[in-house]
Picture 1 (tube, helix red, strand yellow):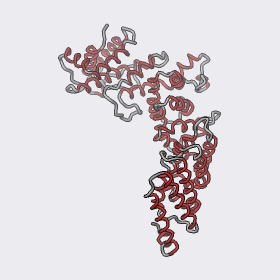
Picture 2 (spheres, rainbow, N blue to C red):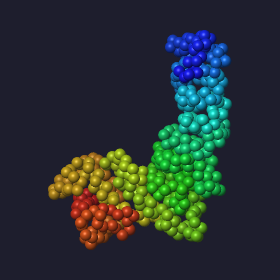
Picture 3 (cartoon, helix red, strand yellow):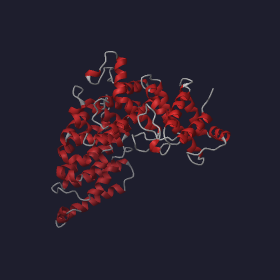
Length: 489
């Protein structure tokens, strides 16, 4: 109870008002069916309207809870409409300043309603937002993410209320400032899978394709890390439509040759985007490959004019080698190491097959997979070894059993490691027969040439993007392991 309410308690009429509200709220406790709820809401409305001269609503916490309960999706639309009438009565009484102060109290019931509302309820709810929430302006910011999460489901293509919802969102953006609006939008996309498609679609609709991203940085919001995280989650969504829209967004917002994001953020987004190849969906793969090879979604060459070759193949090769190859190598190495978000450790199952399947898919694209193979293959070997040994829990990762027959047998008897080995062999069999062993021979030669005093002195392969700490002993153990599990047919 705030100071204003305490002061009003000295007024006998206000005390009677409080008692009347208390009595009206008791009716909710005795409601056994939805018709009782409509009756209880009607009595509460009458009490509130009869005492509208007081700009303070007593028992507001209890009223807020009861109204939220009346908006439960299992209840019929008649109850929803009656509850919205009560909200409007309250908003008229308390005015915008008090509504801003008690925003969370009343919004907890309203925000989840639109996605479950009947067609007759939606215009009433949108009307409340337009009439009472928009005038709050910047004071709406504390509840902005919740509001967007609640309103975005109305942005459904072909919906009767699509235009009205879109206009409402545009007005909200103007009321709270664009950067704050988009920060809240990315927060909604990150935390609420249900609004990812309408959320990303809204951003795509409001991007000015004639301007560069640098000229409309407000789209990224005030926290680019939040946007990067939201995009990374969205591109791995279970819906192909969400993934496709997110890749369209990435193509425009994060070109490799002039991205506003840091290198670390670009690698994080790329690490997430690489997982789309696991769906084997051509529409997704086409967008991913266009991004990496320097084309827009329509196949038009992008990049500095001086680097755009007339031949598309030459342009793709030059763009990839100049701008995206190193980041693709680092992203792939990160995925193999279980750092699918560009350096942040993930809880990856030891027998996770995804890294190997991603690389197998990339090898189907001659401009990409074969171009990075030299730089990531040693990490493939290490990941395979680490996962198999961890799965079997045999001694330590750097110590091998001398009984190779027993080791090989255990690896193939374990269902998880057997599947892992099978997938790895599928990858290795896609190489030319001589390639893997020639690669190992070159690594062995490099190892022998380097001093073996510490990991800091470990060999680095000529084409590697990052130094790989690997001593001669560790390398020999890796080869020993590979001879146990790789098909030599």
